[in-house]
Image 1 (cartoon, rainbow, N blue to C red):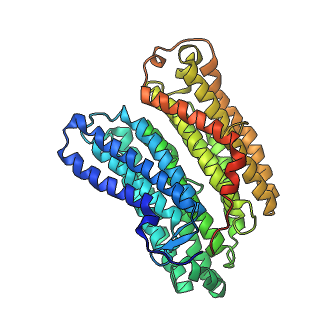
Image 2 (image 1 turned 60 degrees about the horizontal axis):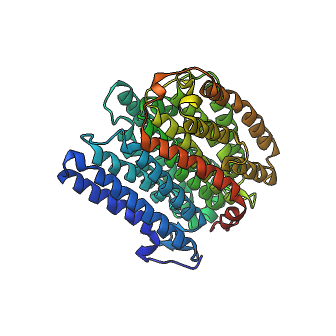
Image 3 (image 1 turned 60 degrees about the vertical axis):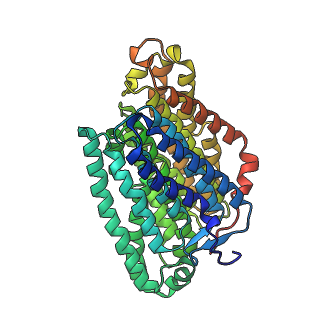
Length: 472
């Protein structure tokens, strides 16, 4: 690190997002209903500005802000680009369904605030700031889940909130116990102090802390909210919840493993590897016979978190862990959003059977669906293929070959339920619900598919940019 830097320009992406959310809330109070799309446009401009600022910051040496509570390094900058890029796609998915909605401007503001929470989690080097990021990412998301105010939406929001509140208490309790053990909340001080602290105290605090972060990631055993919340939410919200909060949570886990818990006496690698194995296996098993497309993607995202946790498990044990996680997170985000974009483009096709004949009526949309679903399996040349390859390599390098083998077996098994969706889509037949659709969502599906393939082909030059060492 080059030292402490309090320059506000270093946190420009976060400033853009916060300012846009506040200004959007004010604008929404004055704009007529048919003009509230301007708040969404403002959010998109803020996201674009944040991506540019993150790209500029990435070319500079690593610095910290607010003492050493927030760090700007390759993990933070990559998370910024992925989160803000994903937010742009979600804003485009939301343009049609929420146009002229009575609370359209509030919807865009909530999206931005939750995304801001994910950015805070990704860059934090302090347990208190991690808790603040957790709450900022969670509370707007509870409202988004029940935004429609119908039966399924209310149920989705309630389950999400109740489980989130429980894990919120656990993360705060864990932070309190770790503070008692290490007499600090900042990672640079806490990390060296924990090996000297009582092991039982460290283990208790770490379990509470991990429980909260794993809830945001949607990993087992904090996954119970995912299928019901995704199914009950609107499709754009489901796309958001299964993508953006995970990015911040996984980046936070990587930092915790690397800088705080890896040498604390707690069996970090063993705990995370068990969580990864359980997530990928249970997610796949539960997805096998799902007929609701949103519920299938919900279980799919639980299994994907299992694969994403492979490099987290070997944080501090493998030199490939950081680049593997960052690349895989970007690959997963764009591919998952591509699949959800197809769901958004066909709002009346809620079950797998409803997609029969899609290739004949919407050939480009069918191609996007096939590429994104096979991409989630890890089929070349999509980006997830390279991401999984990097994750498996990191697991082998870190001494967890059994976990990589289990992940490979689960990858093959996952092909079954993706094919259950693909086969009807490319089969003959017809469904009138496939004719009308959401044009912006179709554009997002095509764009996400192209990015997924392009990122996979460009892996060579991209990966080295992600491999700088984490600060400790």
